Length: 134
Image (cartoon, rainbow, N blue to C red; front, top):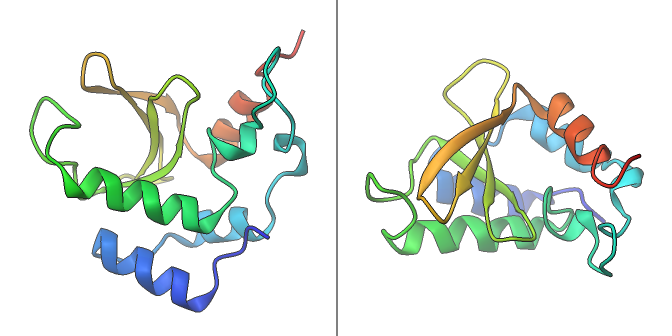
């Protein structure tokens, strides 16, 4: 089940210091079934990484980035970014909560810089659906 319960919502909101955006909660409540498939050539599911389907995994990721100041060149994890998944190679995906539409940023861990990968969650789902598509 991907829906955040009340306790999980409260825990995540406390971690990020603000309410969880409605569009993200709605997406998690209606998680795209097509993402419950493996990456091409490996057994790991896209739903276990790129857009974590498990609310506890989302909470753990947000705890992890806020515990240490090692994530970005600029210092501590930016408070306006809500981690929503982790690419199989280790880059973190996050919603930018300060911008309209909540664009998705990816932390390129090798260079400790962010790159915008989608204008919003809908575009991010399209990007994820393209993984392995021919």
